[in-house]
Length: 150
Image 1 (cartoon, rainbow, N blue to C red):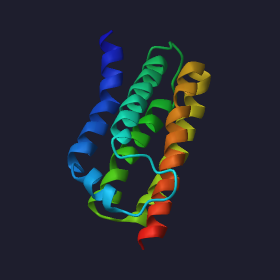
Image 2: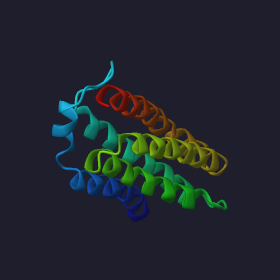
Image 3: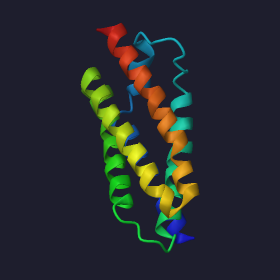
């Protein structure tokens, strides 16, 4: 049980720290011109919390699988680092285009993580899909905001 809690706590801590460092981001986000289908600001922390829990469960399934994990957990850790820095680049530094490119790299790392998790634990691979879909949507929003706000 401690392993499960730890595995869930790690991505939640990454998200919480990024949120803390970008604490005024939703106020700034509210003032930006956004593309069609942009969700309301209150939805982001809800979705991210769910995704971080799913990531944590996926990593737990891999850690406890009794199978060789190879580079799967390393790639998982790297994508968490990329996840952490995206919001800082986008919100704190206002590097909209750089953040988009960073997000594309994050997307590729998430895909690679899912691919590496899948042979170790099929459910772990599947649990990364909502995250991949959300980051796809985030890419649409990020690029749309870049184009609409110069």
